[in-house]
Image (cartoon, rainbow, N blue to C red):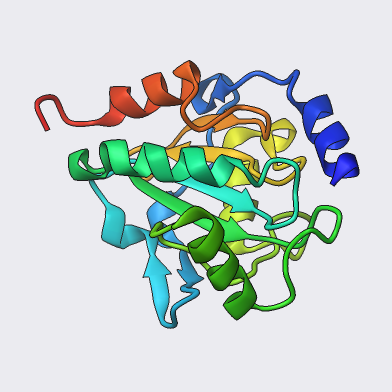
Length: 187
């Protein structure tokens, strides 16, 4: 846990940078799907017209408390269209539980989560999930997840909007302002 907190805080010095500042890879996030922790698929195309915050998570990390903020963000803006997709990953420090059932149980019992959640997924390296390979290209290599709880904000059109480092809390001003800017007026 201390290693996670130290490494995560080391990345906290990075600022969120709009994707437009780093260029954009071709295509759209809507081209990708994830395996749903509850079975079946989560097709990002099903969320077309809605902003999506995609967050790689881990159950035994110093940032795990951010699940509370992710749920609060989702509760605050889901009726206005926001989707918060959590992507459990064991890529950083081996801090995810061993099975999807354990992850789901942990999140429900400790954080009362009802966010969409994928199965345990690789988010870094050449074998990363295709969405994460796309995001690395779309946002820039320096915006690839450096630790658990890295956040990608995807616009309603499936295009990259912003990348937030692990230390950026979900209900922080930069995240909330970026989300609100994507919500339909009066929605």
